[in-house]
Each structure stands twice: as C-alpha cells, then as structure tokens.
Image (tube, rainbow, N blue to C red; front, side, top):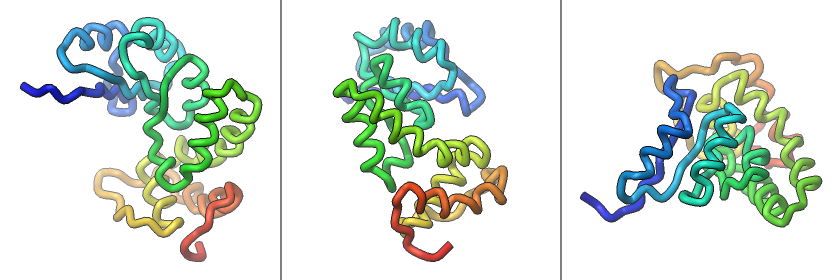
Length: 171
C-alpha cells in the first residue's frame, strides 16, 4: 500500500478506451487524484468533466485538442511537444485561463500543421524526429513502432521553422 497520489491514464490509442462511467468507478479507489484523459471523443471529454471535473485534476492527454479541453475545464496538458516548444503551450494555457480564447485559438491553430503530421505519421515518430531536429536526444524508434508516412514526416523541419523554432541542424 502507498499514500502516493495516483493519476489514471486513459488513452484510446492503446485500443482500449475507458468510458467516463468506468473512470468514475475507479475514483472510488484510494489515492486517485487525477486523470490524464487521452480520448479524442469529444462527447466523452465533456462527460468526463461533468462526472469528474470537481473530484479530480483532469488533464488533456491529447495535445491536438488541448485548447478545446481547456474550454470545458481541464486543468492542464501532458503534451510531449511542450518539451521542445514550451512557450506555445504555456501561452495557450495562460491565455485560456484568462479567458482570452481569441488569442489562444490563434496560437493553437498555428500549431495545427504540426498536429496534422502527428495524426498522419504517429505521435512517437513525430515527437522523436522533432526532438532530434531541435537538438534534444530522443533515441531511435523501437520496433514495432515506425513512422506511418515518412514523406509527410520529412516536412516536419519546415513546419517547426514556421513555428519559430531553432533547429539544431540543417534538415
């Protein structure tokens, strides 16, 4: 047994999606303090906040829909990409918290070409390539993971430059 707080993680990308009612049942277990809600199903996001928003710290587990999730009360994100472009994610968070959704939306939509590459190539491949491009060690993809669309992945350096990131090497 432990007194350490536990954060549940729901990711429909694993092939198993925990519905909000089941997550609510899990909160009856001791030490559940938060939820990383990674489903991309909008109605489940809303149901999650209705059932759990006042009981747990609910965070967006899918960075491509972080801003919409803030609008329904999620308290943060667990975005992998915030590790190499933190200013954009911090700005979106702070603007949303201050109800400046017009400016938050502007910054968020500037990132959409990057999010599109995530959807087309797979998040692990994009994250590793982006980290490599900005000079942070991420290591190679491990089997069975692979980029689903290498031609699209090749566009990543241009997209990151367009977002104002300094690339560590010429790509």
